[in-house]
Picture 1 (cartoon, rainbow, N blue to C red):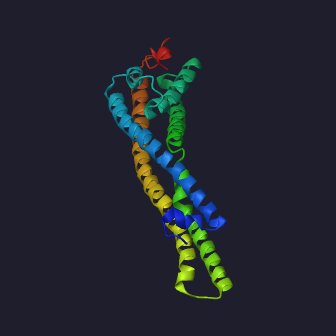
Picture 2 (picture 1 turned 90 degrees about the horizontal axis):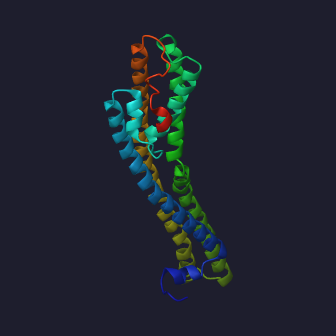
Length: 242
């Protein structure tokens, strides 16, 4: 058997080991695609959420605050806020958007904001379970290839009726490559998954803070109203903005 490197070794591997290695290579390519994509998306979301929260709390009114976020659905806060603004418009249509119905308004908005936060977190956490799957399963898939290769090596020893190291070493080296490749797939996927969870928690924290600030702003504006108006100031200018 020529010792020309890893590809020469793999060329003599069994069909099962080759299939295991092909599966691991596919998993590696897909996991790295997810990793590179999520690095950009989650980093932008984390920075945008922090900046948008600062803009929101600095605004004087709810209308100004939502307008300050800009009509950008890539912003986690804007995506969650639009669901609450839609609920505000529905409450306005049924004449509930006033101080007398403040508990109903706050309760409905709280549910709408929770749905918005859940939708945003679901969007940004998409594909992360795949990284977790790669991190957990790749070592065992590689181990399966190794066990199968070693079984084949010992079977060859039995056929050759010799236990010399030179006879068994090539087969075992082929098999051990599968474990190494499995670890090479699992380690980056596991590290990236944990890093992305931390980034996602930062986005979630900003969304929770935004939810509280949104409800506080609505509560203040409702308390400041002396009577229902034909055009509620909270919704002024929102038809074009949202």
